[in-house]
Length: 420
Image 1 (cartoon, rainbow, N blue to C red):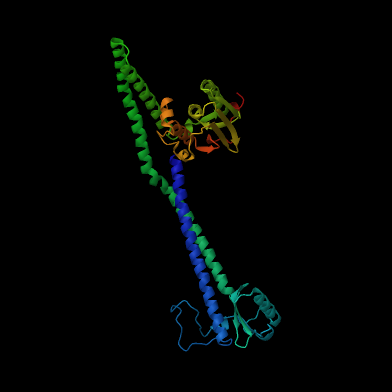
Image 2: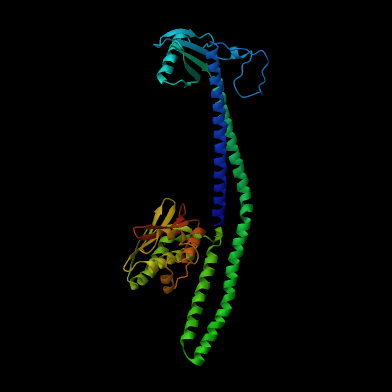
């Protein structure tokens, strides 16, 4: 559970940071690209209005004055562009290509054809920004500006921002990995105190219950049997079983030390549980069968896994519809063992599924009480699965509820556990 909590904490924190950095990178790069496009459009507009020449300002320009396009004495020499004039019938009448060296007249005419075929008033074609302007005489003027250096700069900003975001993600991940244990420590300590309290309280309750049980026996011997003594004896037995279940739940929620894990032949464990519960199911007018893959060995505690099978089968027998069929399956799925127990349960609502693993929750309290249930069996089953680094889920389909435990297998099971 603690490992799952740390993983969930890391996942949420990294997902939040990744989303924030993604939005930041998008804002920076889209904003920078928009700014470059606005400057290019301003330059194209100026060239159209001035007939293909930049007007040099008399006063010196300040680069920090504003972010728009500004003309300096060097602008005519560092800006590459060409201008084409066309008639109303799209015939080229004049080409001004003196300010660009990469294209000759024939290539300029081809570029103009591509621009006109696009049908747009402005846009990019390759790394050129163009503007199409309608003239009063019905003709058209096309101004095309070379933006290679600007777009190359935008690409550099994109690469730098992505690299910076990646470094930030890696740095924060390493820091969280180191600090997550400290962040989750209060929760771990609180959980340990709760477990210790349940264990201590359960043990403390055993003594007065034993005294009450002994006194009830003495009263029964001296006064004879009556309904009050019988009721007291029944409630003492019920409390004793509840205490045992609480102690079991507290123990199964403890982390499983590596040295305590041993190879467990889950197939044989499931077979024994199936044989033990088949008479109980038949006595209740229900059928129980299974399909078990035998050679599945996983690391864990055999008693815990036997208890897991017993809890799932006990739950199925108690809550299966009258005359229903209970089915247990165990199969391999890649590196995982998948243990499923299903039974028809028409009275179960799908909205109740998330709460079935809550402690003391009973979907049908009247049936649970009549069958002796306390509402912590599935909580214990989930704790056992979590202790073995797996997951337990519930699914309702067509009136049939299925509990599925997915547990990690050995990558290479020891030979002595396969053929003994």
